[in-house]
Length: 84
View 1 (cartoon, rainbow, N blue to C red):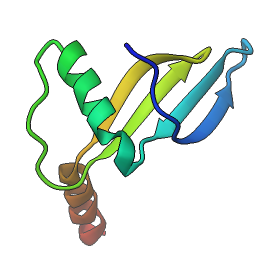
View 2 (cartoon, rainbow, N blue to C red; view 1 turned 180 degrees about the horizontal axis):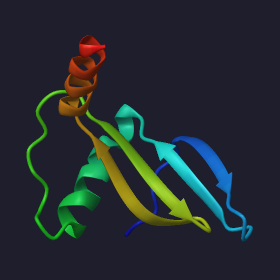
View 3 (cartoon, helix red, strand yellow; view 1 turned 180 degrees about the vertical axis):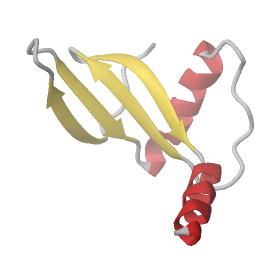
View 4 (cartoon, rainbow, N blue to C red; view 1 turned 30 degrees about the vertical axis):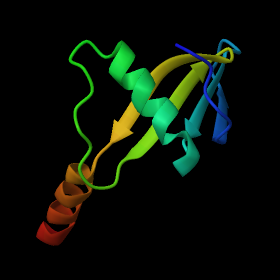
């Protein structure tokens, strides 16, 4: 994967001292993220509908994973909260 543009970052050091960074993409990075997903996902990239949270996970400064959180999860969490 190509290197990701700059983003809001949270750094985590695990018990082995390996630095893991989780970056939340900004609107200017959506095209880069979507292209990486289209190029690297074995199912291919689907068409986005609604708002998505896109995150890049880096290990030792290299892109290790792309995470996509869709609106379906939010609705499900609201349904569960309403049952309580």
